[in-house]
Length: 531
Image (cartoon, rainbow, N blue to C red; front, top):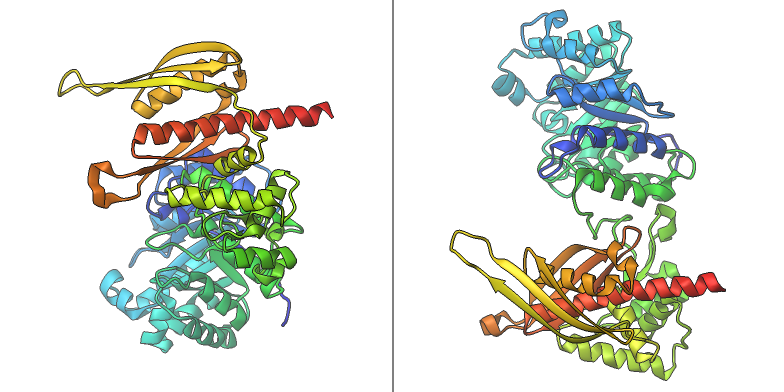
């Protein structure tokens, strides 16, 4: 295996932003670009120069930032058909963007030349060459993206290669082969990329899409064939099924293939970068994502957990810390003593793997799961369960009773929800009323009001997610309901679960665990500080 430098070209802010449900604000684009620069990518494609004012504003604003590594690239197309390049609006916009790098795409497939551009093959080649030459005259580093290259090559190798020659002869610094439709298989990617490198030299890159779930595999296949630049997006965001996922490609290049990319020690920040980009795009992270997902190093089956106890490489292809992730031990009806033991260690509870307490926790876990409880997304509830089994749990309050009223006064008016709660807290009785958008929101509001006087930090807790699952739909409205609540105090996030035939009671159970877990964490922190 030969080690070489692979250039990482990130197009999250352009191609990634074209994905369904993805939108970056102007401020978010700047923040993402700065984070990618810190991370160590080589190129950051900031947007399509001629498409919208936001992208042009980005090119202006990013010049005010002091980037330490990455080059900013503006994206655009070749000149329009039968228009002098110096008069072409899109080409002018690329110059106005004032970036050191310009990436343009052109047509490689005769089908597109004939049916989309509706020009001759000679004019198409002239459009490519004129635009590259003009940009080089303006001292730009020019990256040429050969759109639909693999489809074009399979249709006519001679024509597809002739378009690359037009770009190369005009001075293009990098020829990038694009699997724009995302339908090419890795074997074809390797074979065709290898042919291109034999003909035009090593300055060849790859740009793939994920329509066949092969974006990552195809990118790595091209590198195996000799490509030295990989284009993709963080978390694989992009049109249709997305672009090649850099959060999978980068660790594969570095850890599996031994290639050099990024800055020193940057790989350990991979998960943080992944989460940051999703936060800026306002989308929920993919729990199942390779390397960076919350489930990437999560172990559930008792046999697996027991093996991981003995040697982590038995069921982990890399150490999770290498990419900034962490190992998670899940607990469920599939759990064994190893799961409970490791979970207890994770919680700071001293237990022996063969102790009676571990068996008791397992029995209680099995009983609860038979009744519909699930603790994989409710680790806080599991931790409270362990405390109760170990007789280490001290209730922070006791419920005397609650009442929830939902009232609709007119068919055109929204429902009004009101909750009344009576609690015993530290020997005192507290009676409060809360209002909310719905019954659970009202209950949450009343609970907070009741506890804030005694536990002021409760004000920091807020609900980030609320999920309801009907466990036995065949009994219709009499079905049992499982509620999962995700809560946060701004620093930590935790999940809790409640189950009941009454959705309000299930929600109350999950709310109580959420609040008590926060109070439990605060108490543990105070104990540490006193030591």
